[in-house]
Amino acid sequence: MIQKYPSILLENAVNEFAKLPGIGRKTALRLVLHSLKRTPAEVENFGNAIITLRNEINYCKLCHNICDEEICSICNDLSRDTSLVCVVENIKEVMAIENTGQFHGLYHVLGGIISPMDGIGPRDLQIDSLVERVKTGVVKEIILALSTTMEGDTTNFYIYRKLSGNNVKISIIARGISIGDEIEYADEITLGRSILNRTNFSDSLKQE
Amino acid sequence: MIQKYPSILLENAVNEFAKLPGIGRKTALRLVLHSLKRTPAEVENFGNAIITLRNEINYCKLCHNICDEEICSICNDLSRDTSLVCVVENIKEVMAIENTGQFHGLYHVLGGIISPMDGIGPRDLQIDSLVERVKTGVVKEIILALSTTMEGDTTNFYIYRKLSGNNVKISIIARGISIGDEIEYADEITLGRSILNRTNFSDSLKQE
Image 1 (tube, one colour):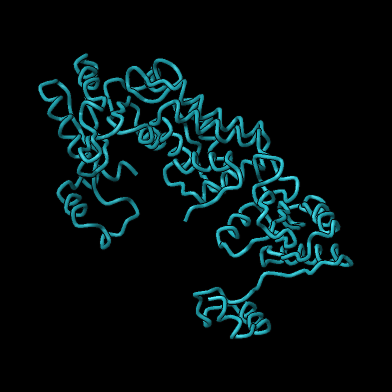
Image 2: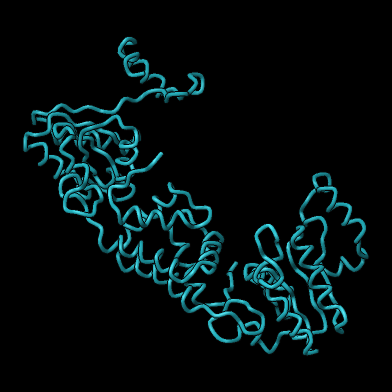
C-alpha cells in the first residue's frame, strides 16, 4: 500500500528516518511527528549532532577506536598495560568490555569481521595495522574477543596465522555457559566446549 | 550504570537520538554507529530533512493538517465534499482514513484531545476554528472520529455542546466488534455497545 503524505517535506523526513536500521515507515512517521512538537532549536541540535559527528569523527591512529583527537583516551591513558591488546570487532565491544572494569590493557578495533557473504575480506579490516603493532615488540599478549560465530572463528584463525612467528602470546576469551544459565537449556556445542575447557575450581573461587 | 563514550561527538549524537520517543540508549548507539558507515552526504540529507521540515512546515489554514502551502491538498481538491467534515486528533488519523478510500469529505485536525492529565484543555486544540467553520454554513455534517477513550469521549461531548444550536448534523464513527475478531474474546463494553447499536443486516450486505 502506498502511503500518501500531505506534505513533501514530511514525506522526505519520513523517508530519511525509514532508512535507519530497524525503523519502519510507521515508526519513522511517529518520530518525525514527535519532532514537530519540539522547538526548532531542539530539532536543529538533533540534526546537527549527527551531521557534526559524521563530518568530524576521528579514528584513533593506534587502536582505530572512535575518538575526538588523534589518539583515543584509552591509548593515551598511561596507567593502562600497553603489553596487552584486546582485539575486538567494533567500538560497541570496546564499550562493553570497558563497562566490565576487568580489562586494563589496550584495544585494537578491526572495524568488522571477515564475512565473505557480506563481501568483507581481511583487507577491509585493520589486520595489517595489528601485525605492525605486534612487530614493534611492545605487545606481549593479544586477546581475541570476537563473536563466537563462524565469521568470528575465521577471523580469529586468520589473525592467528598472520601473527605466528612473532614473539606474542595469543589468547582467546573463555567460551562456556553464561553466568546465570541453567545447564539443561544450554546448547550442546557450548556445553561440550565448557567441559573440554574446564578450569580449576579453586582458581574460579578467586574470581568471585 | 554510566556508559563511557570514547568521543564527545559520539556521546552528543547518542544523547540526541535517545531523546526520541521509544529509543533507548542502546538503540541510539546502534543508529548513530550505523550513520558512521554512511557517506557524509547521506547523513547530511538525513539531518537536514528533519531540520527543514521543522523550520518550514505549514499547517493548512482551513483544516490544520500539515502541508507545504497555505491550504492543504485535501482542502484544495475540488472533487471532495465540502459539506462533510471529519474531526480527527492528528495528522496520523487523516492518513489512516485517507488510506481506507471510504471518505470523500474534508478534515478538521484538532491537534490532540482534551486531557487534563497531560494539561491539554479545549483552548490548546483547534475547536474554536471548527465552530467558526461550521458557522459559515457550508458544513452540513460533522463526523467525530476521535479515539474511543475517556479523553476522546470528553472531547466529543465538548465539541457536541459547542456546536449545538448550529444547523449541522453531528455523527460519530461506529463502535463495535473489529472485523476479523472473535466474539468470545471481545470485551464486554464493546460487545454491549455493538448489540445496542446493531444495524440492519441488508444494509450491511451492501457495504461488502
